[in-house]
Image 1: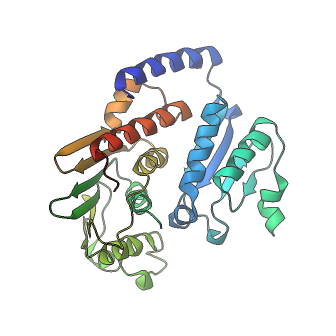
Image 2 (image 1 turned 135 degrees about the vertical axis):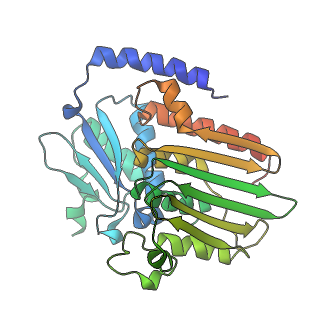
Image 3 (image 1 turned 90 degrees about the vertical axis):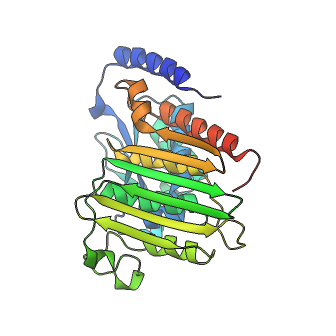
Length: 123
Length: 184
């Protein structure tokens, strides 16, 4: 059973990790998931959860996962942006949990954009 | 939408967009009354009467109401097809409460779905706002409160993947416990 006491232990461990890593948010890779009605209806929530799980399983400490509202491309939802500092933003379209896991492994971890899932590939 | 948890997420996102600092989500099933009640309440900026009268009608959407869009009509329809009621009350400067009821055993009632995912997704979109999630089946009740979690975390980001995954499992375990074998 998950408890608040155990959460406290996780907190203490994370605080130690954060102290040793030093806070440099500007160097973080950002993953942004579209989460308006259109995104939610198209399946954005399981996509977001898959990304969070993948980031957690791989213990990626320099990755921030965030959400955004409708950006007006509803028919391409679920949409996921990957922003690597110093590089152009990459937008993935019609993302599924499986595609999301591959995006994390290939693009976020290894730096290889998954070209066939990007908006440009669909256009 | 395939599950009520997604409707709840969508409605609660409106609360966050209305600058709420606190969002209360309540899901309550009463098997004796064959009734499922869902409420999403916030202390956001609220809506005036004129705006309120149009939010449940998707065809009344104008540029001004675009931010509301389809979310509320979809939730209302989900309640109505399951012999339920839908209401939305709001006061400018005070907040909004959206309520829906469903006949629990109705063939067209959507399943509740993944409520734990909805709550953690909402935490991710809510920034500093606190989420209180209350889940009741008959006499059993579980309350999850991000205020309590933040106190424990003492400065560690609640949206760190490790924390979010832990919280999601915690909520899931408690829902399963409250359900006591029931599938809702």
